[in-house]
Image (cartoon, rainbow, N blue to C red; front, side, top):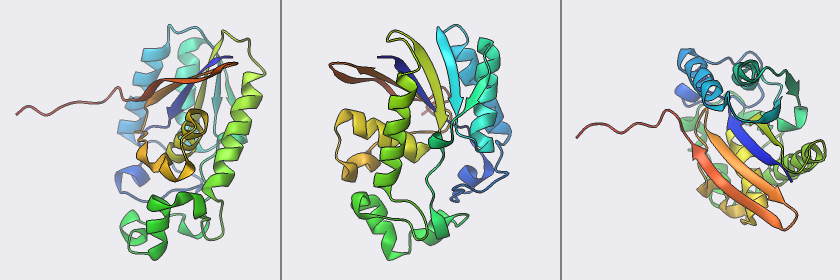
Length: 205
């Protein structure tokens, strides 16, 4: 089965201001996010990638387009790579949400959670795993392709293929513009890289 590069979109002002964008339209990459997208494109430009798929949300498309351009490919929109539908939480600040009782469920027992007016994490995991399976069928076993998506959907699909309990998926971290490499084979799945962050730096002591 193919090698899948799961790329989270770059930074936007909702990420910077610690707000939950959800599926709000017109959430674009900020200056740092655009720079991150270009860095990912530069990193992947010589990889033997056969296709670039993306969530339809603007911040994902704006991350996918430089990657596709560097590879001489077109971006294919795949709605199933969409962000979690967080329902009534959309647009709210994380500080405000952390004060709600439901936040403890989000972090401690996410398998039980359904966002008010939105999806459950189980729904999202099933959606993402089904999408990955469908995309794998479009490619030869030794091919590589990119999926640009969002933090929680990426964490959920990685947890699925690792056999990690849904309640533990929040233990994974997916930074903006990071690359996660997942090989899905007939004899099982292998996580080759998790949250490879090109912008990672360490302050001088």
